[in-house]
Length: 179
Image (cartoon, rainbow, N blue to C red; front, side, top):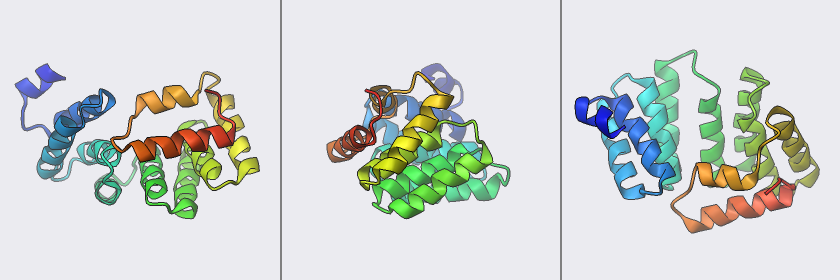
């Protein structure tokens, strides 16, 4: 990704993807700078907008992330279901569990074999102490991806704010997600 940025430093999609990579490496400051630059350059690039939203969310800026996802949806009317998942994550972070569940369910409807929305629902229901629903969501996630574990999920998309990390860990434990 460094080489791609060097070859095309004003390509919003490349910048946004690099920001996601840096996010997974917990280089939040540099990731955020690239995501912000990508959103300024994106214009009508839905992919760049949505990818930048991942970094914005991870850096505890859920309102801005939601704005980017909504813009991406307008520019790409046949958008992938992970856009709904991003909205669910942001709504969870904003402590709006009912709206977060609705967004995750929209992703399930768009692609019934996509496991990520079930993982998000397990987290949301677990935190809301709606344990039967949380356990059903864990079962659904495992039926799609038998290798799912909370620890792998948490490593895959770290969050800058330790309190959000703790919320996710506690919610997965309550939901009965495998560690």
